[in-house]
Image 1 (cartoon, one colour):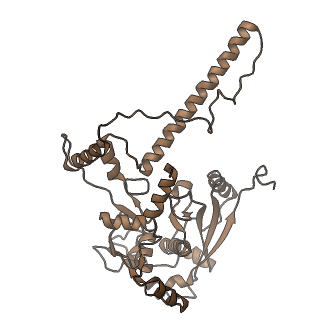
Image 2: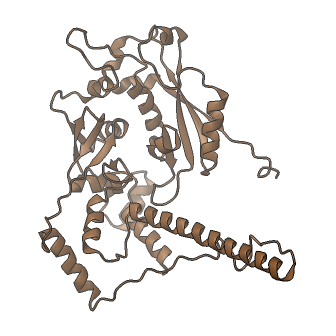
Length: 388
């Protein structure tokens, strides 16, 4: 098995479960087949029962234990490490830096930095080769008087298909397994004159991710020192900070948490892995299996729509993209995502009218039954690529 195949096999084994909940069935194959014909099953649901702490300053939920962080990330790619790009790998990177030797497995941050260094070196090598060819053409013109057009392509000019990075020189070790084990022990115990490492990273969940795990899957307990009813806390997190001389803002149907969670729940329930899309100027990114397998295929922009237009005029909440956007903005977002092979989707969330529902409806998550999501796919027309 080659290196790429071994990595895919390891990823399929590590991220085999799409959700934190897992199912187990100890009955025989014959029994499962008979029950399957009857539409029955003896499978048991294994709930990991994770815990998280609500942090009002960051509007997120922190999962601090290593066990819960690994379960939530490896089973559904929930959250991100607060000191990492995606997967919580800060501690692993620090250990590898102290050991100062090449490891077989690399973290996502190390892979990204390696690709950036290789891309920079490729550009430098290509520029040097082109300059060399141009110098040779100039020398021929000065000595022989012939005009030679410098070639930008050819065997002497490296390309993305022919250029290969130089292998890093690694000092040989007498016993690699022994040196690795000794290095890990020394780092953990703080030997060699360095302080012992402490894992200071935690898994950070967005409010939509945390509520999906707590309400839909019942596998996350959210602890808040100020209140025990997290439903109202998540809604107040997006409202103005309460002042002593002003009363607390009332809950409204156009609360940003409700609007964005409706879209998050819609795509999570369809089997997509939903991640934050701030890097590409959108609200969400949709992955078919997860970030470690493939790139995101779709970019989601949440567009709130009021069922009653008068509700928008009297509302105190300034929802993003609630007002009609300009074509220049849409073209910019669409072009930016088209360049990275992502399809732009406008997710229109219909906010129920205040006259149709009472405000008591917002006291429970049952209010989501009155929200609806519609999708519009926007594609950038490129004549050179779309002739067929």
